[in-house]
Amino acid sequence: MAKKGQVFHYYSLETKKKAVAMRLDGMTKREVAAALEISDIGRLKVWMRKYREHGEEGLIDRRRKVASPEEDHTAGAAE
Image (cartoon, rainbow, N blue to C red):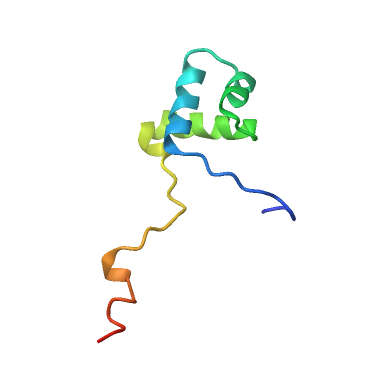
């Protein structure tokens, strides 16, 4: 659950892939977080688990829903 005043950060897929690669090359979580300006070191642990379980596909953020053309309700409004 989010805390009052908590700021959420979004990290691109490229940043996640860089972080995983840096960890696989032997860098510590602190070093990776400092180099890529990642505020939550625990996030790296989550990305590593997802990478091990699903590969790069596991790093894709699926929380944001992208509207498909069939779901666009504004298209039929003019008819």
